[in-house]
Structure formats: C-alpha cells, structure tokens
Image (cartoon, rainbow over all chains, first blue to last red; front, side):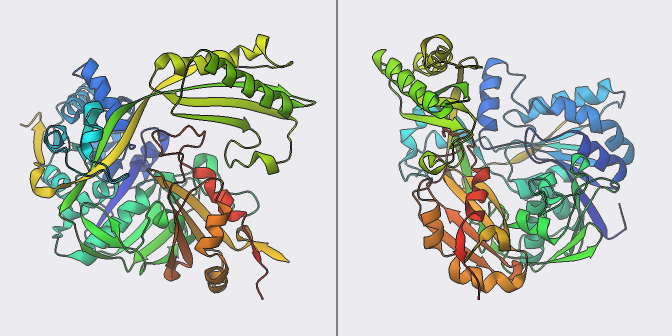
Length: 450
Length: 105
C-alpha cells in the first residue's frame, strides 16, 4: 500500500481482448494493492455459456489462463489482490482453473472467492412479461432463443468476496465500475448511504475500466494530440483516500500520457446522460466533476455526485439470432470502383437466383464508404476492396455470400484479386430487461477455503 | 469562411446497443459557448443523417468544457447484429470532427 490511508487500485484489462504485458508492468512497478481485470463485453457471457454447454468445465474467459499465469507470481509475492469478472458464464469453473494455475506455478494452495447470482436465466424464464428496453416488446419474443441472462451485479457482493480474505475474487457479470469500487468499499467500509464517496469511487472505476483509454490509447492523433511512446503505453491506477479523494496515475517508466484531456475523453465515454449514469451502486452525475493535473501523469478527480441506486438490476439477455455471412475481394487500377460495383450486383443476383433471402444485407466499398457510407460523394481511390455481408436464418444462405464473392475470381468482372475464404458466424444478439433487486440472490462461495 | 469541429475540439465515440455516444471536448474553454450555439443537435443530426435515424440529444458538460451527443438508431440495429465493419461505430467521432461551422467572430 502506498501509504496507510490510501489504497491503490490498478486496471489490468478493460476488455476480453485487452493487451497482456501492461498488467504485469503495473503489478511489478505500480505499487498497487489491487489488480482488476475487466474482461466481459456485452455478448461474451453468451458465447461462454455456449462453450459451457459443450463442456461443463468451460465457460470462463479463455484468457484467464494466460493472464493469471503472467501476474500470479508477482501478485502473490507482493500481496496484490486480484479482482476479475473472467468467471464469465462459469465463475466456479474459472476459480478451479485459477487454483490449478497457482498450483502449477508452485504458489501452493490459493483460495478463490467466487461471486454467484448474476445468472438469472432461471428467474427471467418465468417472467415473459418483462419489457425489452431496446424495442419495448415483451421478453417472451426472444425467450425461445435465449442462451443466457445475466444481471449486472454491483460492488456490494464483490466486497463480500473481498471480505473473505481470498487473494483472488472471480465473478461473472458485474458492472465494470463496480469491480473497481468494491476494493474501496472493502478497505474503507463506505456505506451505500455515503453517496459522495460512492460517486467518487464509481467515477474512478469508470476512468479505469478501459485501461489504456485513459493513458493515451484510443486518443493519439499525429500533429494534433501527440502521445509519447504509445507503443509502450502503461496502464492506469487510482489512488483513493478514505475521504473519497481520487488521483489517477499510471505505471512509472511507461509510454503514453495521462492528463486532463485523456481523462475527459474517458470520463464522458459511453455515459449517455451525464447527470444519470446508472450503475448497480448509484446513479452517477459527472457534470460537477473537476479534473486537475496534480503532477506528471497524475490527475485529480473531484466533485462527483450521485443519487441512490435504483431498485432494479439491468439484465443482459443473450439469444441466438441466425447467422452473418460475408465475403471480400479486391479491385485495383483503372475503373476499379466500377468493376467492384458490377461484381456486387452480380453476386446479389446469383444469391437471389438460388432463392436465398436475408434479413439485412450490406455492400461496402472498403477504401470509400465502409465506415461512413455516402459512396456518391467520396473520391475514387486507386484500389478498392468489395465487401458483401448479410444476416439470415439459414447458415447455407450466409455461407453463399462469401462463396459467391470468392467466385468473382473466375466469374465476375476482370481483374478481381485476393478474395477471402467465405466467412460465417453465429449471431449472438443481446437485449436487456430490468429485474427487481429482490429477485436476485447474489452470494459468495470460496473455492479452496481452509 | 468556416471552421471544423476538428479545429476546436477533440472527440471520442462509444456505443450502447444501437446508440452512439460521441463526446466533443474543447481544446480551449473559450470555444465552448461558440460550440453551444453552433453545434446544435439539429446540425449533428443532419451530418449523421445517412448513418443514423436519430433522434440526437445533446448534453452540456460546462465543467469539462465538453458536450456529450447521444445519437440513437446509429449502429446498424445494434452492435451484436450489425453488418457494418465498424460495429461499435468507433470511427463515427470523425464524422463529428468533420462538421463545418460558421467561422467564430
């Protein structure tokens, strides 16, 4: 711990695909007390639930092995506690895997506290009348295709897990900022009535939850927003005091930058109404926040406000929704765009002739209009990559898109090159409902309790 | 004469479902009132009309010399089912930065 009244919480991952090494640098040189790995995107739990249905030992984040193998020796040696939602759809399975990693590393018998109760599929199954937030339809409309239903739990149950003393805490779905708030609740005993402190802690969690996004990642712009040594940017931590004061910092001797500009981008990120950012712990209002540069790569956060938490949990419902198929092929040189457009028409006609239908279909000219559309006003590039994609109930129809695009090599306009193999992926769609708190039974169990 | 949002502010785009969330943050606080006057939700909706059905809401963050724009029906039906290459719409901040505004007085 940096000093007796300060706790330092570090961010080791902000998405399932986050980079690995900066977390180790943070553990080794960041003088942190807690290392938080946030590894669940919206549909990750659905995907892992499918993995678990094929093998009951699976269903946790596959990256758990590599991440823990990397940091566990340092964390156990230094007494850094790990908090993570890498339990995904199988936190107990993840805990067993984590304990095995620790044992294999010669670290002995490491207990893991497991947060349970986010899986509410058996509860919502009996509540078809719940309203889908996205389209106002009843949950019933997607229940037959449901793969998973997980409530975003809050920091309270993660604190309970930390209270067990286990060096590692693993959960499934927990709201991102809550993973960071939990160590603060555990260390300082903040109550849910102490809204200014909950607000500060939640704001800190929100600043940390995307790791490098606050240290110069997703930020740099040549000539406009320079970021030194971005290739080696460091991950952030927060220094939190018992009175709720917060300073954000980053691993010493790493690249990147941490200043009021980078913090402002992350603070507003994905927050929608800034007076009412709803988490399971509070309703955060960031409009009064001041960010101040308190030193090199150190930014103070003050003035966060909050209203009490709502009476419901947000629940993500994952369901199977058909397939997306896609194919790509390139055209270059004279009339490249005209040949690509012609190829698109030919492929569409061939798909139609075979009787395939699509719920949604899209033609992109990569290099012109694949990101921001408006092909009609874009200048013609020297070369263009044609991409066709469609969503459909039939796997065969999805596959046919890439198959017919690839056939442009031989059966389309002249000079097509570099088609990719046909791609098909299962669509795991996600919608959400609100579930009354009293229906959710969150709890903690310890794997390997002494 | 005109000025681009890019000249006065930086921006980042994020997503929730089928909604895009784009921040606009002034480099210099003295431009905040100008952007408040000129970078209206209507102007933003117009710049995104080929991408997003809307509506567009704007939230002021005076303390952070920023605005937050929430643009609905912007992500091809939603991140999990979108056919777009950029399913999260991370690149949409650049549509915002390219918006042209009348030169500030």
